[in-house]
Image (cartoon, rainbow, N blue to C red):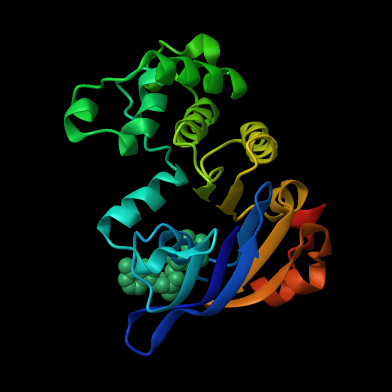
Length: 251
Ligand SMILES: Nc1ncnc2c1ncn2[C@@H]1O[C@H](COP(=O)(O)OP(=O)(O)OP(=O)(O)O)[C@@H](O)[C@H]1O
């Protein structure tokens, strides 16, 4: 279980980016974080992976606070937290399967990682994961030859080969067309259930958050203003969250 308790962060004195944020997510659940630009969504995601140091609060992964980690504990926790990025973060000149295998780097010595030494078991698992994201036949193709939606599916397979407890997705569909966005969101939901992991995604696409996420957290000016099952997200709440009527988004 992932529990965020009273998370607080300021980048600048007297300008809080996050104030007293608390929520929790159970394995097998897909949580979407929504809110206007600058609300603090990315700051939450970066804190969850300790890419930035927050100021106060607790981030408990199965009861253990990752904020108090020493270096080796943090390395272990980072292996348990996969990342999916808006711009995929793939090595374009390498093949699809090589990119998936990069998800194993956190388990390797620097030397084995540098020389790209992977076991037969790891290669077999990479192929199985590519099959799950519908890209088995692309395994030996260069990533530069893929579409955006296909690249994001490689990114998802790369995060899963880490054997994560949590996947953090920072605007995973922001660069995709509508059809690919649905495919990626459907996959995230399905794999979250199949692998019994926690998926937390920052999203601007409210209609897709409502359709695919189990739960939605709404952030406004660094404060949590909504935390409910996604079906509870009403037009009134959206108006409060975004300060304007966006009913068209839900049509
Ligand atoms: N490195 C930084 N230094 C100073 N202020 C920052 C930094 N990163 C973010 N902020 C500020 O913190 C607040 C929250 O930013 P954050 O990027 O978390 O919002 P967001 O909800 O992810 O926005 P968007 O949807 O536009 O990506 C904003 O006021 C932003 O200007």
